[in-house]
Image 1 (cartoon, rainbow, N blue to C red):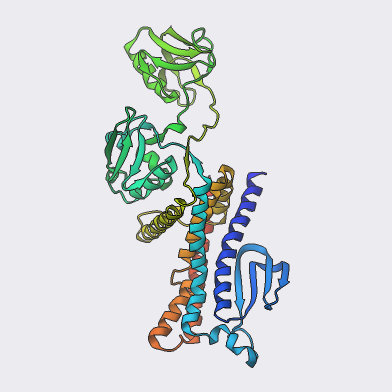
Image 2: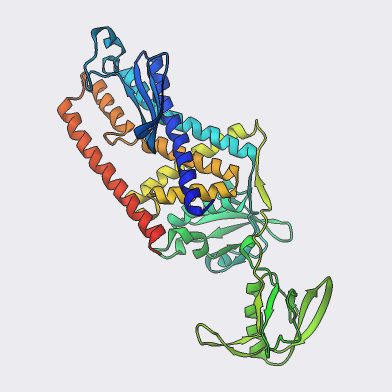
Length: 454
């Protein structure tokens, strides 16, 4: 399946699951409160499939899979026969109306916990949180190649993704944070990352890179892929050689070779390069020469070798709990992600983070859904959990036409002892529509800038 078709398919699956649970929350509580539900629709527009239940509710799957709704009996929308008035939504007590409206977001929060539980039980394959290279702020803090990041602040980091998700909020806040590591020697130590020294503005998507951290799994292995004719390496090194040391200095990744060779060239004279070749360990003599970079035109000391194209690294860590231990873990993760979502909303409103990277449209969500699905079921479950949490919380914002806006009306009704006037509600609807339209416009703009204009 192509990326385009895959993105569309997984977007439909994600929205279908989230909307169905959200609307089922409204539907289930409405029925328990004695309200007659006329239609339960997943999607908008022309019905593709419809069935009428014994309770009189029409269950519909519609043509446009970008939302859904539950239509209830209501005097404000149509004439209601006298016999059915007790089943009209607008005739219910304010507490019942509050329960029905809040049920949708609550259903998404419950689904979030359930999805995180399923993710933990299934086990999310990932990379070990091992440092490959440390420069800049990370190096100044004492982080070194081979360090395993055990925790960032008070959050445990069993995988590299957990470490990244813990480091990014601290970077966005320019907040110094402690990192607990296990060094190559096996001892544990605490490092202080001075993230307050980060630039005032930087690309939030590259926060971990900007602080100077590269994971081990991204390192290119020091395998020779090509030897250029008439260069120092010609006749000395061969394709497939693994370079293990240069002039006695160990080589772990391809990026280690350049600085070692520059040092040799400046010193002058031959040096020993150690390689593994078909199971044998060899020590070979080589002398760097001056070369010109094909793209920049700059001179540099080189050997005349290029790296072998590495295969995708195998995941070497799994985030997994047993079915019982996964229950509290799912609640903890849901609470943590809810806290981070509120914090991100706060950063966006105060200008500490770019709204271009916080408000995502359907293209971004579709690509993320497809990418997570390609990584495996656990990754897709995690993405669904995050989307369900976002949908639940954002729907509680006090914006008219959202569930939170209706809750605001009902809370005002509780305080003043009578419903909000239709005129005030109509004005609120216009304000809410304008806000939602603006938010959608921003989301589509971000989609275009982040995905189509590159």
